[in-house]
Length: 336
Length: 286
Image (cartoon, rainbow over all chains, first blue to last red; front, side, top):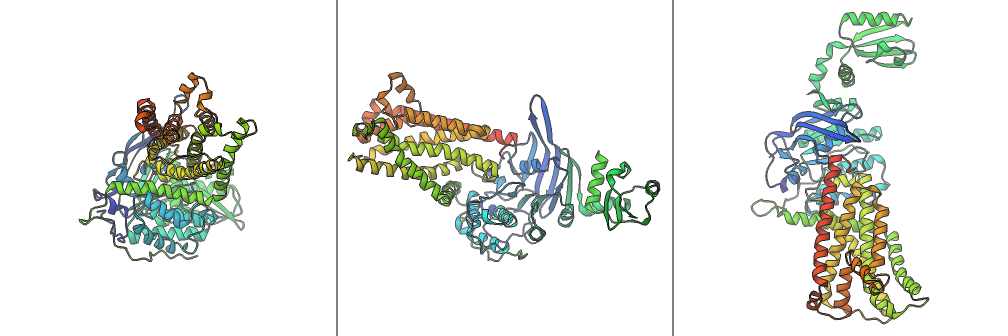
């Protein structure tokens, strides 16, 4: 069985498998590449020789700028896009060669898609998606009830999903992905377009799924604060290549001595000064806050000299704990 | 809004498994998944029941209107006899082609087609479940037209069990053709217009609008290559003319129908499979 799976004993995808999970890795991407041929001889390397192995029970943040290859990676993981090269194993099952068993290991909420039928009710959707994976109604019904109650959708379960708010629709999509209790959940931008409260519900849910049910979650998001809060591990990809793959604490520790905050009186626009490239600049109440990586004292003094030339009063300079956004910006900048 | 995340229900007994704790047979789960598609399609039809009702009324009104036109202002019994049975295949074919294609394209756009691929069962086999729902709707329309026209004109359509075989082969023929167009729709999203054109051509030549005998010999031969023509011809011989299956076999209609249905089903399956694989390779499932 999946080693870190605590499981609730509900009718699960695993119970239908003829074989238990193989090995100790929740998923393994080996030399994964995807090349799209566009027009005459033009090739776009969406994913380039990606290697990633993740043990069970972790939240992995797959981060990167737009077009980095995150969605293509997620879709290759669940067999929706065929890799040009390389292999994907889910709980030990090869997606290309053992597709029926591999897809049972995974539930997915894909970015920008409806994921569920808007003309059907939440209840009908959960029954449908459960049986789509081969479960019987007897196994689906209690789990569907449990999911809908947990997501506060029980009272509206017979209403068409199209009549729900965006947040409720997203909850139904997540419930549909979880209806077979798969050990691996792929969430592509799960909180995009959600209000703060619903995004928090989704976030709490993700945390619960990992800590109480031992699920492995792959999360793509542009909300780096969310990723920092939720993820055990961060993989940053850029132009299809894996730039880093580290536990969050280790990743932040690497940049601990290098991040500073400089507070100035008056407003400053980063776009005006090329030497502020790579820093985040926020202005509020006639104060500006410059935050970013400063690798050594010499660079710090250089920067302060540049700022002094702007005749803005210096309020404070202090080293700070870097957050994921600082690290993300710095890693991408180094790559550029 | 609640942020409660605990599951409320107790784990049910997993009686899904066999006595030795082994999972149930794959075929049971696969059948369940196919019938699940049928049920979902029926739910969707029920959700759009006003549109479905209008479809039924349009088809029911269309046949007498057509007969009125080709009968120079009267509905002639002599024209109804050879065309009524072929016309009963029209709603089945029309709905199978156009609904399957338009539903597929809508699902590709909305992303639910991708979710369908997260099933352990082949998408082409799941589409068979959708076709079953479409056939149920088409059969309902066919029954209303058949019963209505036969009672109106006092034409008897005998219920001969022997007619079930050509009827089943005709459905396979239609399913194969629908899968063929559905597969092409994955690569050619603009196929809707071509599907309309093809369905119009088939209805013109398969004997549903005009008796097949009105056409010159070469055109009759050409028409027999189209879906449903051989099927309705065999049904007409068995049901209306009271011929035995043996005689329909002997005159070559039945062997050709079997070959036609089998080839079209295999071709439709292959075309869908190849285009589905192509879409996964190109990343265009959505």
